[in-house]
Length: 73
Image 1 (cartoon, rainbow, N blue to C red):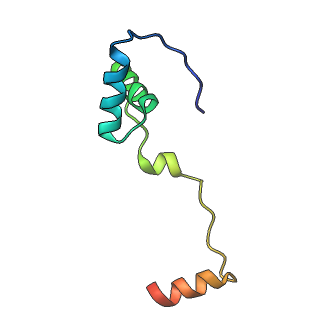
Image 2 (cartoon, helix red, strand yellow):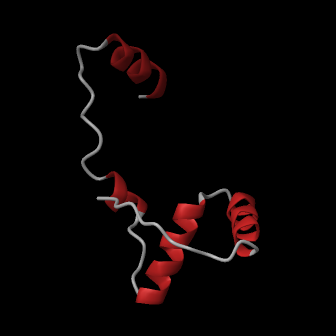
Image 3 (cartoon, rainbow, N blue to C red):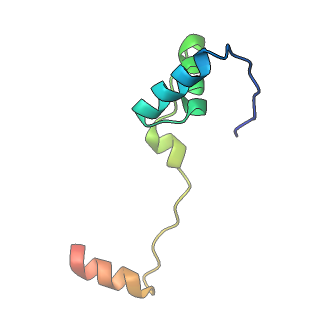
């Protein structure tokens, strides 16, 4: 579960931090979260952990299932 956090940083730091995050293709929030995890000695959750339980099994009565099954199976 995500929580909102308000932080205060020096006005000169913010544009550099935003530029750095943008160059890495992540949000500033993600960048701060990753830095905090590293400082706390935590490992970020794996891709599988983040997505576990988010998908439903394909329904075989779905037309799209038949089309994809014929193409890829």
